Structures are given as structure tokens and as C-alpha cells.
Image 1 (cartoon, helix red, strand yellow):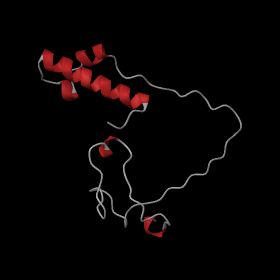
Image 2 (cartoon, helix red, strand yellow; image 1 turned 45 degrees about the vertical axis):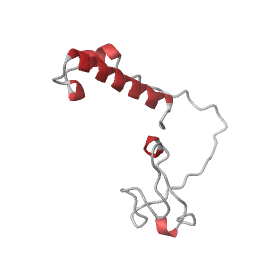
Image 3 (cartoon, helix red, strand yellow; image 1 turned 60 degrees about the vertical axis):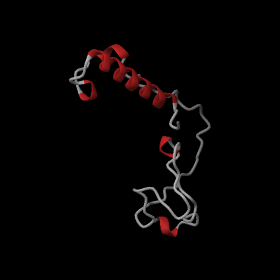
Image 4 (cartoon, helix red, strand yellow; image 1 turned 90 degrees about the horizontal axis):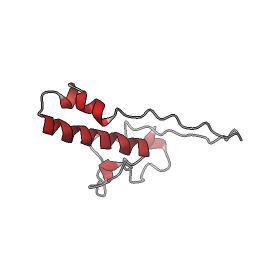
Length: 103
């Protein structure tokens, strides 16, 4: 449990784009953070000595696939809006694949 952890007083953050514009002030938490319900996870690094496998990345749909889609946020909007929204979704997919989470 979080309350038993020696670093429980450390100011926490999400560490991603949610922190880009605002961080909690002193004695403030994010809405969904509560020390009484938070958990602490620990990991131990045990290298195998071998070369790790190459990461498998599933590429996002192409922009054309998105433009042809008629579901979700692309349903019932004009072609110009669809073009803008497809571009926005595609760029978001790429930032996740590239590991860009702040900003």
C-alpha cells in the first residue's frame, strides 16, 4: 500500500501530456489520486544476458483507411471535417508509436 512506502510524501505526477500545462500545487493531488487507494508497484531488473527481441509495432490505419471509415468520431461529418479529423487521429497514433507523450 502507498501509505507504507518510504517515498509516500514525494510529489507525484502522471509523467505524460496531462502534466504539460498544469501540475498540482503543494498539498494538492490530481482528481483521481488518493494516497489511501494508491498502490506501489516494484520491479526487479534481471537481465538475461541475451539481446532483447525487436519490438513489434502494429502500425495504425493509413490516412486513407481513416477517411473511408464511417464510425466513431468520423461518422456523420462533412468531407472537410473528416479530412481534418482523420489527420488529427493519424498524428495522434504516430505520437504514441514514437513514444511522444508530453506536449
